[in-house]
Amino acid sequence: MNQNPGVIGTKLGMTQVFNEDGSVTPCTVVQSKPVVVGKRTQDKDGYDALIIGVGTKTAKHVKKPQAGFYKKQNVDPKALLREFRCPADFAAKFETGQEVKLDELFEAGQYIDVQGVSRGRGFSGVMRRHNFAGGTSSHGTHEYKRHGGSIGMNMTPGHVLKGQKMAGQCGNKRLSVLNLRIHQVIADQNLVLIRGGVPGAKNATVIVRGAVKKRNGGKVS
Amino acid sequence: MSGANPIVEALEKSSLRDDLPAFRVGDSVDVHYRIREGEKERVQVFSGVVIKRRRAGARSTFTVRKVSFNVGVERMFPLHSPRIDKIQIQSQGVVRRSRLFYLRELRGKAARIKDVKDR
Image (cartoon, rainbow over all chains, first blue to last red; front, side, top):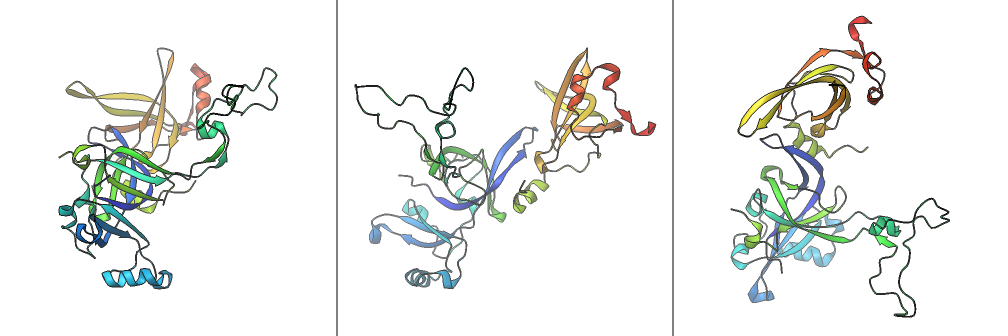
């Protein structure tokens, strides 16, 4: 399980950044102003985690049980909450109600994983959804230009194989992109620049955390 | 097209260059471009007609076309690249469109552009 600390953020959009040697890096800008809302501890809950919240919510939109939780923690209600599993010694560095600065979590060059919900494309055909080639548009083709072709064999096996790619809902699905890299952390503006693209539309919620498939949470230093 | 997020725009602002002259499509320019050859760095000049400008914040680019040994050469530069040493405007042209791709089909006399001064 990913034990690397992470944050909930908002994808603001993409831009490009010039490096010192004049080369260009395409970057996704993610904004996040996380606050520690609570903690999970080994003694009480059986695991260690930080409960991170972002954004604000007006009092009338907070349901009563949640309002009680926020009151107990003495933190203003947040728009989004999420637990991030992390080692106990890391969790000990933060107190409830404390704001987490992005440069405490990330560093330039670090490998990270990003999760988001991809842009929905609705019920799509196989050409858009699975990059099928479709049929030829000439040579006597009639009403078979964007079809997928055959979906299986005859008597053996007598049914369509499981996992056969067909038309259906495309996008609007939770996706993780592994091993992206942090280009720059701008802590005073609560921004982090990520090399390359991340799933989701502009202003979509994304989760950024240290890479699970790298040592030391993807940190390079 | 929806504009960029204001925060992203502010972020881009710091990398924009304001030291370059204002030039337009149709102008003839010399682009002094720093190139790296192994360890050494030198400035190469690319002279030609601006046939396209893309105005997109830090991602702005422009394309310069020249005919060299009877072969058309087009080169695209990122406008705000730190590798651009300077841009010199040789002449200002009079054109009626924003993309001069029609020049690709023309050669010699036909491919001339009217100068602002001769108007």
